Image (tube, rainbow, N blue to C red):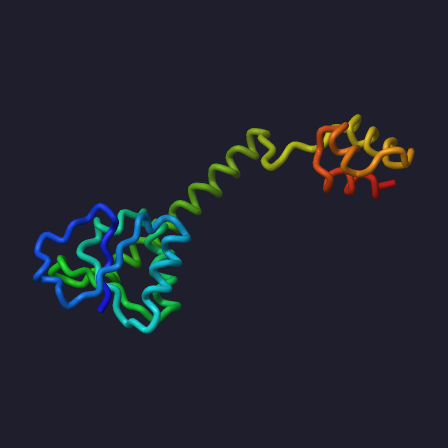
Amino acid sequence: MKLFLNSEEKMSEKSTYREYDVLTVEDLSDKSELSKLLIEMQGESFLYVLSFESLRISTAQMSKLFDLLDAAHVELVFLNETTDFSMYLRKICQAEIKSITYRTKKGIDNARTQGVVGGRPKTPKKTQEKIRELYYSRKLSLKQIAEKCNVSIATVYKYSKIS
């Protein structure tokens, strides 16, 4: 049986948790650390955690953790909790994600109605023309044109192919 502990957590009563293999992970919000945990969990059915607080992740990250554990067929069990609230926790996490998504979309829509244009700024017409002029003069490479116009090579390629 595997018991998760974060790197700062100390097992107060080691004798109580003697039957567990202890997994220590720095930060579950880090994808590489989460992957490391899932690799360690191969072949396990349960991931035991002392408490919800010991995970130290947001509700959105908790939702991702639940999805990953579901995909690996691993169930999350909190040892220091008297009741199993993981089902409720999942629902709260999903509701929080929906709420964040809604607020984000609403904010973007409000910004658009006020005239704010999102995304990367367009390359100025002068720069587009300069790229085409330098490209068709055949004196410089794409890399040199990109450096001269202060744009990426992909931008040079994009505007050099437009006639």
